[in-house]
Image 1 (cartoon, helix red, strand yellow):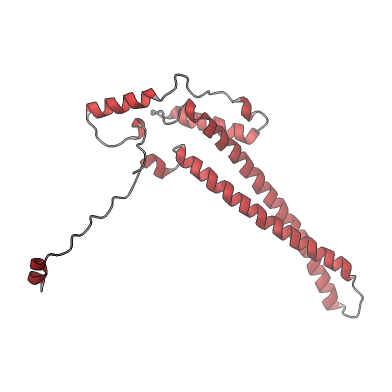
Image 2 (tube, helix red, strand yellow):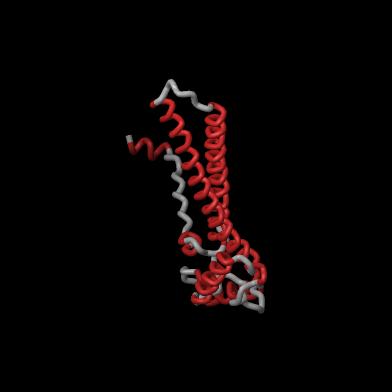
Amino acid sequence: MPAKKPLGLNTRHETLTDTESRLAAESAVTPARRLPGSLDATLSGHPVAAREWRSLMKLYNSLDAEIVSRLDMGMLLDYCILIEQLEELDMLRDSAVTEWKTLKKIIDDFKKKIDEHPDEKVDLKQFAKAAEAVNWAYNKIITTDGRVDRKRALIFQLRQSLYLTPRSRAGVTPAEKPKEEPASDLDRLLDS
C-alpha cells in the first residue's frame, strides 16, 4: 500500500476526527523553520541549479498545501544539482555528436577519394587513425547516452518523491480486481 499523501493533497472525504489526527501527525514531523526562499550556499556557482531552486520555491510557495518541508531540503538540493548535471551531459553529447559527424565526413572523403582514384596511393595509416577516431567518438556518444539515461531515471524518481509528477500528486493506485470464487457444484449444475 502506498504511503499516505499529505493532508493538503488528500481528496478523500474524511471525518473531522480523522482529519484532525492526520493534521496532528503531520505537524509532529513538520519542522518549525520553513524552506528558505533564498538560495542555499550549496548552489553558489551552479547557475542552472539556482534557477531550478527558484522555480521550485515559487511553485511550492504558490500552493495552498505544504507538501515539502525543511526536512526535504537535501533532496531538493540534490534534485537541482542533478538538473544542472543533466544539462551539462546534454551539452557533452551534442559536442560528441558534432565531433563524430566531422570525423565521419573525413572517412567518407577518404572513401570517395579511393573510389574516384583507385590508382592513386592513399596513406592507410592516416585512414586507420581517422577510422579509430570515428569509433572513439561514437563510443563517447554511447557512453554519454547511458549516463544521461541513468541521470533522467534518477531525476524522475526524485520528481515523484517531491510530488512533481501527476501520478504522485493524484495518488492514483488502481484498485485490485475482486477475486472470483470458484463455482460451487450446485452453480455448475444450474449453468449446464
